[in-house]
Length: 142
Image (cartoon, rainbow, N blue to C red; front, side, top):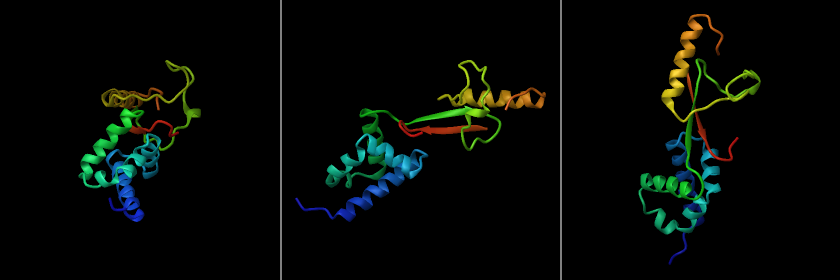
């Protein structure tokens, strides 16, 4: 078996992480941390002679499955709001919500959309209430 130049493995891994990030709407750092946490980077490195022969679309799907089987899958969460939220600020949260003060998310897009629509109607009628925010949750990323 021939030794693969380190620069080839690095280039391949960087491309893989970048494409994984794009596919899953993550930053490159989030994608790397997720793949590293569940040893997918090590797996790719250890089996480079095979993985680099598999089409990128397949290996990206395989990496998602590998991580899910070794920890947790990626989860997309939604927040129903009528304004764009760039940063979560719990000081803006009202204390008397169903489960107390917090920033509520749902994995159900329709539920978040309906809540945002209800809030929009309430604002038009003059009710006191404060888009849809999509949050990619990567276990361990805060």
